[in-house]
Each structure stands twice: as structure tokens, then as C-alpha cells.
Amino acid sequence: MTNTARHELVVLGGGPAGYVAAIRAAQLGIDVACIDENPRFGGTCLRVGCIPSKALLESSHVYEEAQHRMRDHGVKVSGVELELDVMMSRKEKIVDALTGGIDMLFKKGGVTAYRGRGKLHGAESIEIAPVEGADPDQPKIIEADQILLCPGSIPARLPSIEEDGDRIGNSTTALSFPEVPEILVVIGGGYIGLELGSVWNRLGSRVIVLEALDRVLPGLDNEMANLAHRAFKKQGIEFRTSTLVSSARVDTTQSKPCTIEIQGGEPIYCDRVLLATGRWPATDDLGLAAAGVQTDRRGFIEVNENFQTSVPGVYAIGDCIGGAMLAHKAMEEGIVCVERMAGIAAEMNYDVIPAVVYTHPEIAMVGQTEEQLKEAGIAYKKGVCPLGANGRARTLGDIDGRVKILADEETDRVLGVHIIGPRAGDLIAEAAAAMEFGASSEEIARTCHAHPTLSEAVHEAALAVDDRAIHTA
Ligand code: FAD
Image (cartoon, rainbow, N blue to C red; front, side):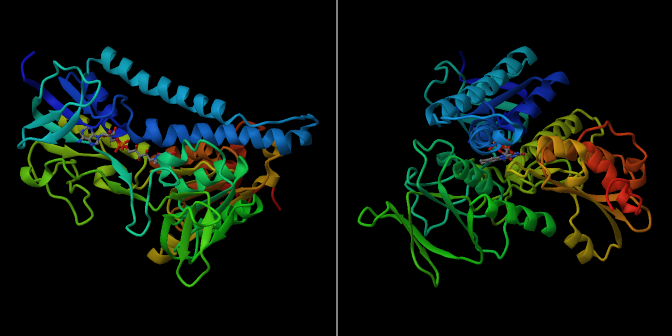
């Protein structure tokens, strides 16, 4: 094998942005290669993000249902026990199946896969530093007509938090604790902290969430965040908002292995610490500056509307360019970016990107919050359906929640939809589709929804926008 290979397009990073872009490029007849330093393609999302966290959320939910809720259905269960190792290996099997699936898709689709750490080598090639397990005959330099950078993101660090990758760690650490910590402190009340905090709370930990802001889940509609906050408190999660952590360290001289110092408060001693204060672009050491690729002061790669960087022929998408750091946004950018390279007039609509928090209750939103509409001075109408009025929610025994639709006062166009309750993440798809097609609340209200389904709550909220809800007084 020669030391150099050439492709029309080389994609650096095989996460949701990179692997989707590579598959779509191959479909369009582009000769494409994808490089990842990890032996498994799929990126953060499949390996240590969306998928393993949802596997643990499902398993811990089943454990909690068996303990506390099956009785409500007349199902008496006794001797419920947790087998954490089985739960963890189930999670790993799901990750293996999905990451292995990408290898298969690459093979079938004609995407060439390279393993190793890639770095820009000028503006027209990537140099690959081999990693363990990589094919020793693999080329070291990949030249390409076009380069697509998708290195993703890594957990943010704080200098005062002394992570040891075990007792004090990040989301990846918290996906594989070897035992249920007696006390877990989560630093950061965003969706990653609350999802993983929920997992360990359900499995028996005392979970304390420390948040610098005066609210949790920043970015969500206030009303929904407040309802969620209340529900989590009822589940036993403790919250200390407006709380600044000054340090966290392992200290074996104390009653618990970890010590957290709080500004103006008593220290907290706990078994484990999860630092969940956001994510940074993984753009260090990619050779960006040498190649002339510009980044902003936080390290996000700057791109234009075609995802082109400051260097012609070099593109970037996904978490590394900022915006909503979500897998489906990254995948969508992957498709739009390579379709545009192929001359297809594809568009990315950043106004309609749903966001979901997979806690219980689940929370989902698309479009604008009430606070954003007020701030922008946009007059809006609001329709709400509490889930207590929904037959399917009653049969599920899961009536804590609501659907809220915000529509333009004048045109009735749907501007935002916010859902809290069972399967909110699935229900939001209807709202996203409606908004993508510029639907009015009247059009949702005129659409026949199957009975009895949770989606009827979306229908009912749309009716409520014009004060004609049938099932809510
Ligand atoms: P990544 O998935 O980070 O992929 C980047 C890839 O590039 C990685 O495989 C990395 O190994 C590789 N790479 C980086 N640098 C190099 C290099 N120099 N050479 C070779 N390879 C390199 N999003 C959702 O939409 N829904 C969720 O439910 C959700 N849950 C999450 C839960 C957790 C705990 C976390 C941490 C994240 C979650 N996310 C979720 C976010 C989601 O994982 C990311 O938005 C998504 O993975 C971004 O995709 P990406 O392709 O841009 O980057």
C-alpha cells in the first residue's frame, strides 16, 4: 500500500455529522473516505452520548416502575433487585450493535474507512497518525478535492474541578459507574446533568444538583423548566440553584472521597462528582491555524452558509461549528452540506430544530419560547392541553404534563411548541413537521388525530389556541 491515497471528499470524524455526510456523499456518487481515531464509528452520540444515556434511562425507568408503579396496574412484584452489571452490559450491546451498523453501512455504501488521528496537512490533505488496531498498511496521507471537518466536541472542564476520571469525572464517567454512588453531586443543571442525575437517582443514589444560574434547563421555555424542576424535586433530586462551586477534589481524609467547596456555603462530601457544564469544540491539534482555518475565541470553526471555512475546499459541520450541539442538527448539516457540494439546492432550517430532554417527565420543544417571543415583541396566542384531559395519558397512568402551542396573533402561524409528559420526544415530531411546512394552529386543529393517543393532546392544544378545546374546561 502506498503512503498516500486520494479521494474526492475526505471526512474527518465519524460521528453523526461525519458518518451521515459520508453516506450521503457516497449515495451521490462522490468518492468519499471517513477517518476516525476511535475504533468504533458513531462519535460521541453512539459511543458515549445519546445512545448509552438513553439505554440507562430506559433501564433505570423499568427498575423504578417495577419498584413503585406496577402495583398501580394491579401487578404485584416482590424481590426487585438491581443487577448493575447486567444493565451496563445491555447498554454496551446496544452501543456495539449501532456502531457496528455504521461499519456495515460504510461497506455497503462504498465509504472508505480509515482509523487514526487526523490533522490537516495544508488545505488539501489530511495526515493520519495511526492508533491501536488500525490497519498498518493504511495510507498516512489522504489527499482530497474537498475536506469536511467533523471532529465534534468534548466535555467542558473547569480548572477548579480536579477531575481524576473516576471519582470526579464527566458524562462518559457517569455512564459506567461501577456501583451506585451513595451521594452523587452533579455540577450543572442542563440536560446532560439531569438525564444522568435521573438515572442514578432512580437506581438509589442521593443526587444533589448544583447550578450557578437561578434555574435549571436554560434554553427551555420557563413554564416547562419550572414544571420539570418541580417533578424532579418530587422524585427526590435535590437542587441548589444560584450556587457557585469553588473547587472539587478527591480527599480521602474526609468522611467521603470527594469534597466540594461552595462559595459562601458549607462544603459537600460525596462519593462521586459529575461535571456537566457544557461541551467544547474538539478543535485543538487539528492543524487549523497552520492551514488558515479560522476559529472563534472559544475554538468553534467559523463557516459561511455553505459550511465553508475561511479556506476554500475545507468545510465544517456538527458540534465543532457551535449552535445547538445535538446529533440530529449535526446529521441534517451533514446531508445539506454534501448535497450543496453536489449542486443540490438543500436548505438548513435552524428555526425548526427540536430539542428533547429524556427525563421523566420527558420534555420537548421546537421553535420559540414564550420568553423569546416577548423579548422580540411578537404578539402570540397560546393554547394549552393538560395531559389529565388525555385518555391515553390516563391509561398510561402518566398524566403529569401538558402541551403548549404558541401561534402568531395575526397570522396564526405556529411559532413554538412545548411538551412535557410521556413520549414528548416523539410527539414533538408532528410539531416540527407542521412548523417546517409553515402550518397554522388551525391546520393542526383541522387534522384528524387517532384516538386514544397522546397526540390528541397536540390537537387539543391547537384547538385551545382559539378557545375551542373540547376536552378541557
Ligand atoms: P461527535 O459525535 O463528537 O463525533 C466526532 C468524532 O470525531 C468522534 O468520533 C471523534 O473520535 C472523532 N475525532 C475528533 N477529532 C478527531 C481527529 N483529529 N482525528 C480523527 N477523529 C477525530 N444529542 C442529541 O441530539 N440527543 C441526545 O439525546 C443527546 N444526548 C447526549 C448525551 C450525552 C451524555 C452527551 C455527551 C451528548 C449527547 N448529545 C445528544 C449530543 C450529541 O452526542 C452530539 O451533538 C453529537 O454527537 C455531535 O455530532 P458530531 O458528529 O458533530 O460530533
